[in-house]
Image (cartoon, rainbow, N blue to C red; front, side, top):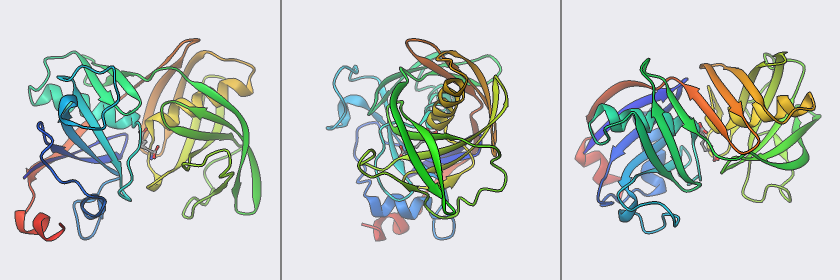
Length: 274
Ligand SMILES: N[C@@H](CCC[C@H](N)C(=O)O)C(=O)O
Protein backbone atom coordinates (compact mmCIF):
# COMPACT_ATOMS: atom_id res chain seq x y z
CA UNK A 1 0.00 0.00 0.00
CA UNK A 2 1.48 3.31 -1.09
CA UNK A 3 2.10 6.20 1.28
CA UNK A 4 3.76 9.62 1.21
CA UNK A 5 5.05 11.63 4.14
CA UNK A 6 5.01 15.40 4.16
CA UNK A 7 4.78 18.41 6.41
CA UNK A 8 3.70 22.03 6.48
CA UNK A 9 5.85 24.05 8.89
CA UNK A 10 6.66 20.75 10.64
CA UNK A 11 3.04 19.75 11.20
CA UNK A 12 3.53 16.32 9.65
CA UNK A 13 1.22 13.92 7.87
CA UNK A 14 1.08 10.48 6.33
CA UNK A 15 -0.84 10.63 3.04
CA UNK A 16 -2.69 7.53 1.86
CA UNK A 17 -3.94 7.53 -1.74
CA UNK A 18 -7.35 5.82 -1.78
CA UNK A 19 -9.28 7.24 -4.78
CA UNK A 20 -12.21 4.82 -4.53
CA UNK A 21 -12.52 4.77 -0.75
CA UNK A 22 -11.49 1.12 -0.37
CA UNK A 23 -9.27 1.48 2.70
CA UNK A 24 -10.59 0.43 6.09
CA UNK A 25 -8.94 3.31 7.93
CA UNK A 26 -9.84 2.47 11.53
CA UNK A 27 -8.81 4.68 14.50
CA UNK A 28 -6.50 1.83 15.55
CA UNK A 29 -4.67 1.96 12.20
CA UNK A 30 -4.43 5.77 12.33
CA UNK A 31 -2.90 5.62 15.80
CA UNK A 32 -0.37 3.01 14.65
CA UNK A 33 0.58 5.00 11.52
CA UNK A 34 1.10 8.17 13.56
CA UNK A 35 3.05 6.48 16.35
CA UNK A 36 6.67 7.70 16.15
CA UNK A 37 8.08 4.39 17.41
CA UNK A 38 5.88 1.55 16.14
CA UNK A 39 4.67 3.34 12.99
CA UNK A 40 5.78 6.00 10.49
CA UNK A 41 5.13 8.87 12.89
CA UNK A 42 2.93 11.89 12.20
CA UNK A 43 0.54 14.41 13.71
CA UNK A 44 -2.23 13.17 11.42
CA UNK A 45 -3.28 11.14 8.40
CA UNK A 46 -4.61 12.58 5.13
CA UNK A 47 -6.57 10.06 3.10
CA UNK A 48 -6.71 11.13 -0.56
CA UNK A 49 -10.17 10.09 -1.72
CA UNK A 50 -12.68 11.27 -4.32
CA UNK A 51 -15.60 13.09 -2.65
CA UNK A 52 -18.07 10.73 -4.33
CA UNK A 53 -16.35 7.74 -2.66
CA UNK A 54 -16.77 9.14 0.87
CA UNK A 55 -20.25 8.36 2.25
CA UNK A 56 -20.11 11.05 4.98
CA UNK A 57 -18.77 13.88 2.76
CA UNK A 58 -20.68 17.14 3.31
CA UNK A 59 -23.05 18.29 0.56
CA UNK A 60 -22.16 20.97 -1.96
CA UNK A 61 -18.80 19.52 -3.06
CA UNK A 62 -18.55 18.09 -6.58
CA UNK A 63 -18.10 14.32 -6.48
CA UNK A 64 -14.91 14.45 -8.58
CA UNK A 65 -13.14 16.87 -6.22
CA UNK A 66 -10.31 15.30 -4.19
CA UNK A 67 -11.33 15.11 -0.55
CA UNK A 68 -8.88 15.45 2.35
CA UNK A 69 -10.16 12.87 4.83
CA UNK A 70 -8.24 14.15 7.87
CA UNK A 71 -7.57 12.11 11.02
CA UNK A 72 -5.81 13.27 14.18
CA UNK A 73 -2.98 11.13 15.62
CA UNK A 74 -5.34 9.77 18.31
CA UNK A 75 -7.60 8.39 15.57
CA UNK A 76 -10.31 11.05 15.85
CA UNK A 77 -11.77 12.80 12.83
CA UNK A 78 -11.50 16.60 12.51
CA UNK A 79 -13.33 18.95 10.20
CA UNK A 80 -10.34 20.85 8.85
CA UNK A 81 -6.56 21.08 8.82
CA UNK A 82 -4.98 24.18 7.28
CA UNK A 83 -1.43 22.83 7.03
CA UNK A 84 -2.94 19.59 5.75
CA UNK A 85 -4.68 21.37 2.85
CA UNK A 86 -1.37 22.92 1.76
CA UNK A 87 0.40 19.55 1.79
CA UNK A 88 -2.60 17.87 0.15
CA UNK A 89 -2.72 20.41 -2.70
CA UNK A 90 1.02 19.97 -3.34
CA UNK A 91 0.56 16.19 -3.32
CA UNK A 92 -2.20 16.47 -5.95
CA UNK A 93 -0.13 18.67 -8.29
CA UNK A 94 3.18 16.81 -7.72
CA UNK A 95 1.55 13.45 -8.53
CA UNK A 96 -0.45 14.81 -11.49
CA UNK A 97 -3.82 14.10 -9.84
CA UNK A 98 -4.60 17.81 -10.30
CA UNK A 99 -3.24 20.20 -12.92
CA UNK A 100 -2.95 23.24 -10.65
CA UNK A 101 -2.15 25.93 -9.85
CA UNK A 102 -5.75 26.24 -8.58
CA UNK A 103 -6.71 23.10 -6.65
CA UNK A 104 -10.11 22.66 -5.02
CA UNK A 105 -9.87 20.53 -1.86
CA UNK A 106 -12.89 18.97 -0.19
CA UNK A 107 -12.94 18.94 3.62
CA UNK A 108 -15.57 18.25 6.28
CA UNK A 109 -15.74 22.03 6.78
CA UNK A 110 -16.60 22.48 3.07
CA UNK A 111 -14.61 23.29 -0.05
CA UNK A 112 -11.21 24.90 0.56
CA UNK A 113 -9.72 26.25 -2.71
CA UNK A 114 -5.91 26.20 -2.71
CA UNK A 115 -3.37 27.79 -5.05
CA UNK A 116 0.08 26.28 -5.56
CA UNK A 117 2.33 29.31 -5.99
CA UNK A 118 5.36 29.53 -8.32
CA UNK A 119 7.73 29.42 -5.33
CA UNK A 120 6.20 26.14 -4.08
CA UNK A 121 4.28 27.72 -1.21
CA UNK A 122 0.54 27.18 -1.11
CA UNK A 123 -2.21 29.69 -0.39
CA UNK A 124 -5.44 28.28 1.03
CA UNK A 125 -8.78 30.04 1.11
CA UNK A 126 -9.62 29.21 4.73
CA UNK A 127 -13.17 30.56 4.66
CA UNK A 128 -14.87 32.81 7.18
CA UNK A 129 -13.55 33.40 10.70
CA UNK A 130 -16.42 33.01 13.15
CA UNK A 131 -15.84 34.65 16.54
CA UNK A 132 -17.52 32.67 19.35
CA UNK A 133 -16.89 35.05 22.27
CA UNK A 134 -14.56 34.98 25.28
CA UNK A 135 -13.62 31.88 27.22
CA UNK A 136 -10.69 30.80 29.39
CA UNK A 137 -7.90 28.25 29.25
CA UNK A 138 -6.14 26.94 32.35
CA UNK A 139 -2.40 26.41 32.20
CA UNK A 140 -0.03 25.72 35.13
CA UNK A 141 -2.61 27.04 37.60
CA UNK A 142 -3.21 30.25 35.60
CA UNK A 143 -6.52 31.26 34.02
CA UNK A 144 -5.87 32.72 30.57
CA UNK A 145 -8.49 34.77 28.76
CA UNK A 146 -9.00 33.87 25.12
CA UNK A 147 -11.19 34.36 22.07
CA UNK A 148 -13.17 31.38 20.82
CA UNK A 149 -12.93 31.06 17.05
CA UNK A 150 -14.41 28.68 14.51
CA UNK A 151 -12.61 28.30 11.19
CA UNK A 152 -14.34 25.04 10.39
CA UNK A 153 -12.87 23.50 13.54
CA UNK A 154 -12.90 24.99 17.07
CA UNK A 155 -10.13 27.13 18.60
CA UNK A 156 -9.49 29.16 21.72
CA UNK A 157 -6.72 31.70 21.09
CA UNK A 158 -5.21 33.34 24.20
CA UNK A 159 -3.00 36.40 23.86
CA UNK A 160 -0.16 36.13 26.41
CA UNK A 161 3.07 38.02 27.23
CA UNK A 162 5.46 35.27 26.14
CA UNK A 163 5.12 31.75 24.72
CA UNK A 164 8.68 30.43 25.15
CA UNK A 165 8.32 29.07 28.69
CA UNK A 166 4.79 27.64 28.50
CA UNK A 167 4.50 23.98 29.46
CA UNK A 168 2.22 22.40 26.86
CA UNK A 169 3.23 18.82 27.61
CA UNK A 170 -0.12 18.17 29.26
CA UNK A 171 -3.65 19.08 28.16
CA UNK A 172 -4.50 22.68 29.19
CA UNK A 173 -7.92 23.13 30.78
CA UNK A 174 -10.88 24.62 28.90
CA UNK A 175 -14.63 25.02 29.40
CA UNK A 176 -16.30 21.84 28.10
CA UNK A 177 -19.70 23.57 28.05
CA UNK A 178 -18.35 26.06 25.47
CA UNK A 179 -16.36 23.42 23.58
CA UNK A 180 -18.27 20.13 23.92
CA UNK A 181 -16.30 18.56 21.05
CA UNK A 182 -12.94 19.67 22.50
CA UNK A 183 -10.85 22.56 21.26
CA UNK A 184 -7.47 23.49 19.79
CA UNK A 185 -5.68 25.92 22.13
CA UNK A 186 -3.39 28.64 20.79
CA UNK A 187 -1.09 30.84 22.88
CA UNK A 188 -0.23 34.02 21.04
CA UNK A 189 2.57 36.49 21.82
CA UNK A 190 2.36 39.78 19.91
CA UNK A 191 5.72 40.88 18.44
CA UNK A 192 4.43 43.91 16.52
CA UNK A 193 0.90 44.91 15.45
CA UNK A 194 1.22 42.59 12.45
CA UNK A 195 3.47 39.80 13.72
CA UNK A 196 3.01 37.19 16.45
CA UNK A 197 4.62 34.08 17.89
CA UNK A 198 2.32 31.16 18.53
CA UNK A 199 2.39 27.77 20.22
CA UNK A 200 -0.47 25.33 20.06
CA UNK A 201 -1.94 22.35 21.85
CA UNK A 202 -4.02 20.52 19.27
CA UNK A 203 -7.16 18.57 19.97
CA UNK A 204 -6.48 14.90 19.27
CA UNK A 205 -2.70 15.35 18.99
CA UNK A 206 -1.03 17.38 21.78
CA UNK A 207 1.54 20.11 21.24
CA UNK A 208 2.50 20.32 17.56
CA UNK A 209 5.10 22.45 15.77
CA UNK A 210 2.36 24.26 13.84
CA UNK A 211 -1.40 24.32 13.20
CA UNK A 212 -2.71 26.13 10.11
CA UNK A 213 -6.26 26.69 11.32
CA UNK A 214 -4.67 27.70 14.64
CA UNK A 215 -2.57 30.38 12.95
CA UNK A 216 -5.75 31.88 11.48
CA UNK A 217 -7.33 31.87 14.95
CA UNK A 218 -4.15 33.39 16.42
CA UNK A 219 -4.14 36.17 13.82
CA UNK A 220 -7.82 36.94 14.46
CA UNK A 221 -7.21 37.05 18.25
CA UNK A 222 -4.15 39.30 17.88
CA UNK A 223 -6.10 41.67 15.64
CA UNK A 224 -9.07 41.58 18.05
CA UNK A 225 -6.75 42.60 20.91
CA UNK A 226 -6.00 45.78 18.92
CA UNK A 227 -9.68 46.44 18.19
CA UNK A 228 -9.23 45.27 14.57
CA UNK A 229 -11.17 42.66 12.62
CA UNK A 230 -9.06 42.59 9.48
CA UNK A 231 -5.37 42.57 8.60
CA UNK A 232 -2.36 40.61 7.39
CA UNK A 233 -0.42 38.89 10.17
CA UNK A 234 2.90 37.04 10.05
CA UNK A 235 2.70 34.08 12.40
CA UNK A 236 5.90 32.44 13.71
CA UNK A 237 5.36 28.92 14.99
CA UNK A 238 8.07 26.55 16.24
CA UNK A 239 8.07 24.84 12.80
CA UNK A 240 8.43 27.97 10.66
CA UNK A 241 6.49 31.02 9.53
CA UNK A 242 3.19 31.50 7.68
CA UNK A 243 1.18 34.51 6.53
CA UNK A 244 -2.50 34.91 7.39
CA UNK A 245 -4.91 37.44 5.95
CA UNK A 246 -8.22 38.02 7.70
CA UNK A 247 -10.86 40.00 5.81
CA UNK A 248 -14.48 40.86 6.65
CA UNK A 249 -15.70 37.84 4.74
CA UNK A 250 -12.92 35.29 4.81
CA UNK A 251 -9.29 34.41 5.43
CA UNK A 252 -6.25 32.98 3.66
CA UNK A 253 -3.21 31.05 4.84
CA UNK A 254 0.08 31.01 2.89
CA UNK A 255 3.02 28.80 3.76
CA UNK A 256 5.30 25.97 2.70
CA UNK A 257 4.46 22.34 1.94
CA UNK A 258 7.30 19.79 1.85
CA UNK A 259 7.58 16.13 0.95
CA UNK A 260 10.08 13.89 2.71
CA UNK A 261 9.33 10.32 1.66
CA UNK A 262 7.23 7.96 -0.34
CA UNK A 263 7.06 4.22 -0.11
CA UNK A 264 5.04 1.11 0.58
CA UNK A 265 3.56 0.01 3.90
CA UNK A 266 4.28 -3.59 4.78
CA UNK A 267 1.01 -5.39 4.00
CA UNK A 268 1.53 -7.82 6.88
CA UNK A 269 1.86 -4.90 9.33
CA UNK A 270 -1.32 -3.26 8.00
CA UNK A 271 -3.31 -6.51 7.99
CA UNK A 272 -2.29 -7.30 11.57
CA UNK A 273 -3.86 -3.99 12.67
CA UNK A 274 -7.33 -4.96 11.44
N1 LIG B 1 -3.01 20.73 12.33
C1 LIG B 1 -4.22 21.17 11.77
C2 LIG B 1 -5.47 21.01 12.58
C3 LIG B 1 -5.82 19.53 12.74
C4 LIG B 1 -7.16 19.28 13.40
C5 LIG B 1 -7.21 19.65 14.84
N2 LIG B 1 -6.28 18.93 15.65
C6 LIG B 1 -8.65 19.46 15.34
O1 LIG B 1 -8.93 18.42 15.99
O2 LIG B 1 -9.48 20.31 15.07
C7 LIG B 1 -4.12 22.49 11.04
O3 LIG B 1 -3.04 22.71 10.44
O4 LIG B 1 -5.09 23.22 10.96
